[in-house]
Length: 395
Image 1 (cartoon, rainbow, N blue to C red):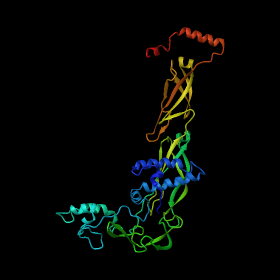
Image 2: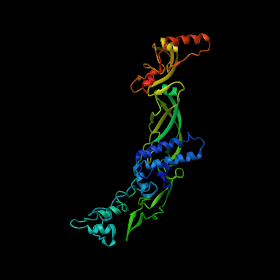
Image 3: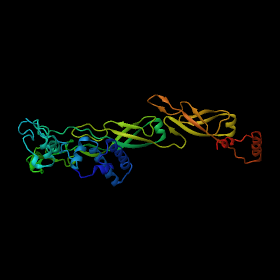
Image 4: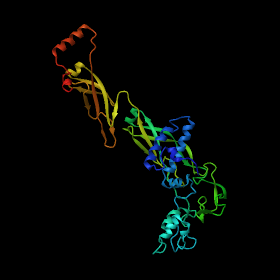
């Protein structure tokens, strides 16, 4: 189905963009305009569909070749095009340039004619290169059935809670994807009959001029058949329709922000019986007010009193498993980090747990009565060292 949409502009990339650049832009846009992120926003939904359509064409090498050549994509246009037949081919098997003198036409034809010399057909390679896209080998483009094509992959961003990422969970997602049309079973054609091809008027041939020469070519729209199957009234010839489908996804224990989960066969449906693409879930974990995650380690800041830090103590601290005992060494300083082995998050691949890192924060006592102030003054008289002395040596 031909469309005049500028697919490169839709994805925000240049015409020379590499596959990776196109893929990254597509992922960014589907996250931005996904219907689940923009509920009730018709404009965002339309933009989402256009992004899907553009990526469906530009992510496929053959479709992109057709789009770059003609400015739109249609299933009836073959990618590329066969060159002319070599000398000795059977009549009707293709066009043969040998025996023609193109010097009178000037330009590339004159250069090719001037280069002819010792060997048969020598010098006409340049002419063939220039005009080869005009010709199609009848044996290779005479209406052969379209080959099955794999459907494109889909990307979906998913936010999960901190505890769900630790323990794992099962979620149900409503995914918008292209599925096989139930009316035409993916063929794109209607069962109501055929119509005469408007491009060739039923002859199967179209004429094209190259300089002073007129060539008869196989019609790319009907592939030489002269007739077109009527388009399916539901999918309009696409063979696929957009549908919202509920998909169950298992989030494994230990999933983290940046984890990418694959659900096989839940991408867009393929064409002409081709397999469906895959669905990729990009996980984002919500922040926790107490725990901070770094890989499979968990960090937490724990306040202690001056007495506990100076004399040492055993205290209870929260972990992802509940309460646990932590030994505070004598003379612990504020900001010091203590490690609790295997109190972090399970690494399912290695079957080992990370650690919990406890950062000590010493809290000074509130001197709200005279007795407390007197004890603190006595402590100051016992310890006269200047804790800032080392700073001046570094200035």
